[in-house]
Length: 331
Image (tube, rainbow, N blue to C red; front, side, top):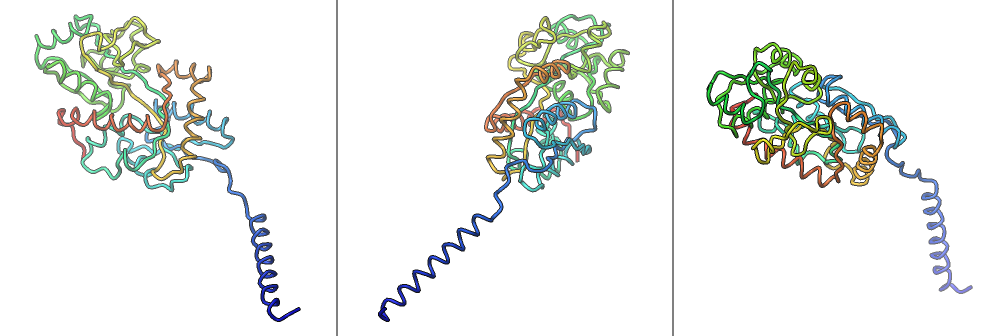
């Protein structure tokens, strides 16, 4: 063998050894685990037992079954859901800390003076899971049987009627403010600490009307303790097909509902978002989920992540002028 060939042979042998070592390293490296490979937290910004919590737990059960890992609901109430929203906005964007968001968060962007998160920029939308219509209910002693009659009665008695809400800045409050603005009526807002005490005083006649979530008021409508005038969604509710919409009652584009969906911190991998979106949308096709939703007066809403993102943006922008006109503000 000549001296000229020895370096070439050495280089070839070195290359073969390096290649073999590299191949061995690749073959022994752990494969990236498929999502999810550990329990996932779904944070809820309200106490257990409320509509947001109940719908979140329905969906958590379905995601657990379809994706093979535990999806656990964790309640972090406080600050009108801002504590939970801010917490998830700052979480690691790996798909293991999610937020079950409600319409309240969209309203809070304008309602609160200091908000540490941007609902549009700081989150990756996953899917809109459900909408729950509000209904306009009145005390039966108020001598009206339609929305237009209520408007006429309020105009004939300025400052004499009061509407209840589950608290300042809630979707129930803002629905009342929107009605007040659109109808051009002078009515008083009376906030309560929750829907239950508000409905109790509505039945007792201390207040005259309210835009309430359908699940908490509908049983009282059926028993005759309250009278329902309209549903606030653009389509009639399957739970109350004879009840007209606000739009049918003369209020064009009056579309107000409590909505609930799943979002993740911004930067969460797109494949994780798509996997969660597909699982949620598939769950909405199940008869058991539809039955559970129906018992709450909820309607399943299939969306893509992009569609849900556009919806959230429209809700933030749509509620801003209503909040500002109402004068409601929380420091």
